[in-house]
Image (cartoon, rainbow, N blue to C red; front, side, top):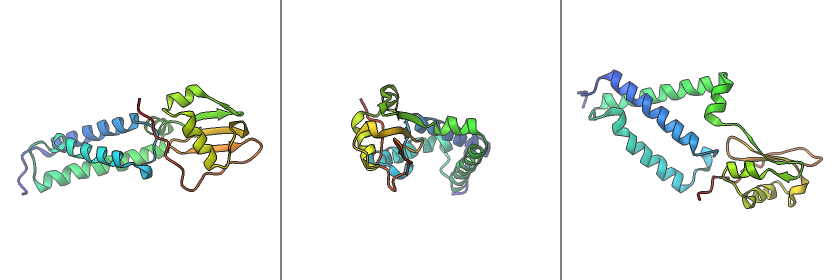
Length: 171
């Protein structure tokens, strides 16, 4: 149980490499809020965790090997979270930037397509803000957390309490 087969430094390097690969993969999947995970997102996360376990510890199934890999992952996550708050370029790289979807009552279709959204999803978000006509919108922005903020024409914005999910559509 305490007898390790893989050197500690190798477990550390493996765990760091897996952390970076998974963060990159999740970052490429688009803007979404973790609190809005679907069942499919949860299944994917569990399968990813299972798939990368051996990549981190190799044949080492010892308690110490598992604790070491977990410690490296926690330390990396804490370091990245701290750096992300202090350094704007890292935050932009990891979280992305907000995307303008509507400006002066006009839908920016190119931006909508780039984010994997369609007009139906945008209109649903506008209805959450009490807006039924796109021409009544001064600005609508897809935030980095996946929610859509809306500034009505001639008004002020407010964020809805429980924003709907605006996940990329496949195909």
